[in-house]
Amino acid sequence: NAGVTQTPKFQVLKTGQSMTLQCAQDMNHEYMSWYRQDPGMGLRLIHYSVGAGITDQGEVPNGYNVSRSTTEDFPLRLLSAAPSQTSVYFCASSPQGRTEAFFGQGTRLTVV
Amino acid sequence: QQQVKQSPQSLIVQKGGISIINCAYENTAFDYFPWYQQFPGKGPALLIAIRPDVSEKKEGRFTISFNKSAKQFSLHIMDSQPGDSATYFCAAGIRGGGNKLTFGTGTQLKVEL
Image (tube, rainbow over all chains, first blue to last red):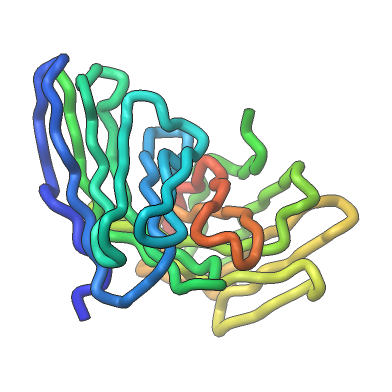
């Protein structure tokens, strides 16, 4: 099992560009989520999903879109990148009924 | 609004010493309190977790102490080793609520020889 796989690992964007951060898990987990990690602020929840076709907003959803068409994949879309979105992004998954989160290796995004 | 407050921000401990990291929460609906360990360039990994119906949980050198009335919990690392040098995050969530966790701001631990 690869666990939770995030691509790309690094990305530099110009202000106003759009992109999609990919997240895939092979553990058949129902729950998936996206967090951003900023210095001194810990991890903050952006969006989460409790199953295919079901998504909801977390603490800091503005500027991000998600969709969940399959159990395995949960992409995060930046519609128009801003410097404030410079961060490290982590995707996580959990089995249904469990709260234990398994994290990917992260994507370091820089918006210039 | 920081619902989970973590201290200290950084900690230096001598090899063999005890590392103690403290967290406090506000939301009484939380009933799952994990600690995550993160090495540079890696994602957080679950270290140990506790439910509020117990006051202490121990796994090897790692112990969580939980005080429900004070809404506080702490991580103790006994016999700290240089390999324990990492960033530690406390978190809080609701059991069965998926991986919707509220994290503390992190503690950077350095264990010196």
